[in-house]
Amino acid sequence: MTDKAPTAPKIALAPRTHTTPPAKFSHGVRKGNILQVAGQVGFLPAEEGRPPTLAGPTLREQTLQTLANVRAVLEEGGATWDDVMMLRVYLTDVDHFAEMNEIYDAYFEEQGLTQPPAARTTVYVGLPPGLLIEIDALAVLG
Amino acid sequence: MTDKAPTAPKIALAPRTHTTPPAKFSHGVRKGNILQVAGQVGFLPAEEGRPPTLAGPTLREQTLQTLANVRAVLEEGGATWDDVMMLRVYLTDVDHFAEMNEIYDAYFEEQGLTQPPAARTTVYVGLPPGLLIEIDALAVLG
Amino acid sequence: MTDKAPTAPKIALAPRTHTTPPAKFSHGVRKGNILQVAGQVGFLPAEEGRPPTLAGPTLREQTLQTLANVRAVLEEGGATWDDVMMLRVYLTDVDHFAEMNEIYDAYFEEQGLTQPPAARTTVYVGLPPGLLIEIDALAVLG
Image 1 (tube, rainbow over the protein chains, first blue to last red):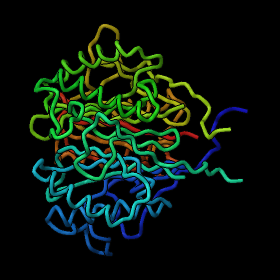
Image 2: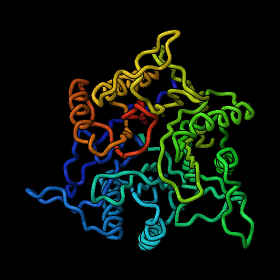
Image 3: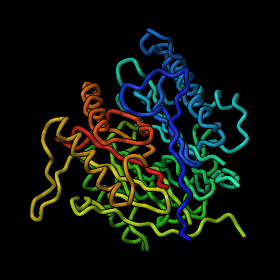
Image 4: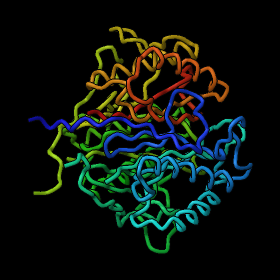
C-alpha cells in the first residue's frame, strides 16, 4: 500500500462551439477532480470556414463572450461555476476595471451560484490587437 | 466503488481584517485540500467607513502588507506558508525586482518555514495607480 | 474517520542543471500528486563560477531552453509533459506569438505525448532585460 492516488486519465475538453486553438494546447483539461481552463477570449462560437471572430469590439461584448466560453469548457468537463476556485482576468487597460466588475457581477448574479464565488486576480497586460480581455480558470470538482 | 472524491464544500475565506472585494469574488477559497488566495495588495486592515487604504507608497510597505494579507487568508483557511505551492508576484517595474527579493527573503526568513519555499513566478504588469505589487497564492494542505 | 488526506511532505525540486534562484523560492515543489514549476526562463545549465547565462538572444533559443528547463523540474518530481495541466507563457512582444507557437508545436511533436496537451494561457508582460519568454507549469500526477 502506498498513498499514490489511483491513475486518472487526462481528458481534453474541447466544446464543439470552440475555435481550434492556434497551437498544440487544449481549451481545457481534466484529470481526476482538477480541471484547468485555458485562457479564453471573446470569440464567437466557431463556424466552419470562418476565422475566429470576436463577439464585438466592446468590453461588454468580449467579457460576456469570454465568460460564456469559460463556462462551456467547464461544462464539457462536468463542472459548473460553483466548482471554480480561481479566475484570472487579464485586461489591457486599467480604466476598464470598474466596467468589467459591473459586467462580471451582473453575470454571476444571473448564474445562481450556490457556493461562494471563486477567488480572482486581475492584472493589466498586452493582448493581441482587438482583444480587451482574457480569462482562465482553475476548478476543483466533487 | 468509483475513484470519485467525497464531495467537499467550497469555503469562502474572508479575514475580518480584509476590505470588501470590489466585485463578486472571494479573497480566498478552500475546497478539500486545495486553497486559493486571490490577488492581494498592500491595503491596511479594513476600518469601518474608511475606503481601502494602502500601507504606504513604498515597495517595502506594500510588499510586507501584501504578504501579511496573503498570510491572513491562508490562516483563515487553516493553512500556513508551509502549505503554499506557488506564489505569483506581479510588479509594475523591473527595477523593483532586486529590492522585492530582499524584502521577500527577509520576510520568509522570519516566518520560520519548516518545509521548502514555494515556487514563484514574477512578471511585470500594469496595476491600478499607486499599487506597486500584487501577490496571489495556491496552497495544498495536509 | 475524516476526509482529511494523509499528510504529504512538500518536496523541493531543484535539478542540478539549474541556477540558484535569485530569492527564497523553489524551482519546483511537489506535494502529494500536485507539482508546481516556478517561472522558468532560457538560462543554460548552471556552471560553477558563471552567472546565469541565456541560451541566446533569439526567441527560438530561449523558448527551447525554457521548455527544457520546465521539463527538468517536472522530471525531478517524477512527472512528464503528459502530467501537465497548465502552461503559462509570458512573452514580451505580441509579434512573437506566431513564431513561439511554431517552436512550441514542433517541440511537443517531438516529445511524443500520449495524453492530450496541457491548457495554456499566453499574455504579454514586461520581463528583465534580454528575456523574451518565461513559462511556468502546473502538473497533476497519477
